[in-house]
Length: 147
Image (cartoon, rainbow, N blue to C red):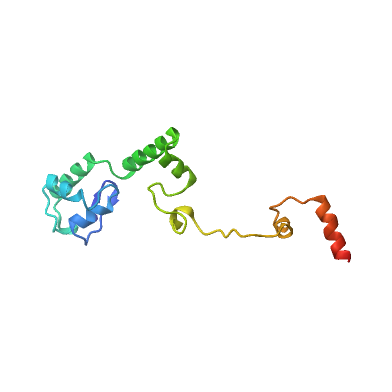
């Protein structure tokens, strides 16, 4: 029997206190409060819950913003930071860490895969199409090939 709370199928073999953390917005800190208000034993397995306990859990979880509702709240907060032009908002726009972490050597998850940028000669840059071709330099290059 699969237990479904807030649109999420809970893992049946886990205990209730750790199984509820599968719901986005319910973590280790606030799961105790949810269990106290629902009057459910934390050490009970999810598969052993009665129908009455499941409905009590569903009602208490409905009072907390979870899943899609919480995701929209977080996204709206980030949009507000971007609109106001705050430091955190600009860091979100640039795709960089917004909470003071160093970016010189770390922050790979936020910045993406490494892109090596090194010194290249102009001749090599023109091959890759990065630098514009100068007509005078092309003449010099042709003369070098002929000589």
